[in-house]
Length: 138
Image (cartoon, rainbow, N blue to C red; front, side, top):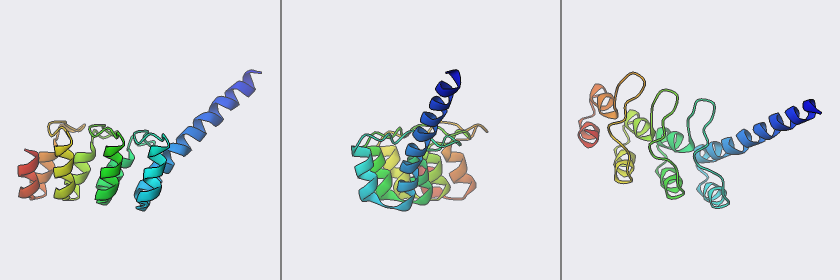
């Protein structure tokens, strides 16, 4: 009986991870219509993958401004940190996406959050020589 209960728990856990990864996969695919439908149907935008990265982080990394907007409008945690301590803002800055960085800041992104090495998005913008973004995230 314990074996069946354990297998049931493992199976349900697997299904939960697979369902949430489909949000990440859909966001990365650029299929904005399906992404919107999934979120409106109640799928959480904030369940991370095994690296603690969310769909919002990947959308920022990929430069998909439309997915960024859809995810935030549907409750994505803008200041959630991954295993390295990076937030969506770090990913926008790392890819020199001033438009996305500006949007994130306008929506409440915390510019003072530090990653596990003690750096802020500003530090990465400066090291990349991107003065426009550095000024924005100062």
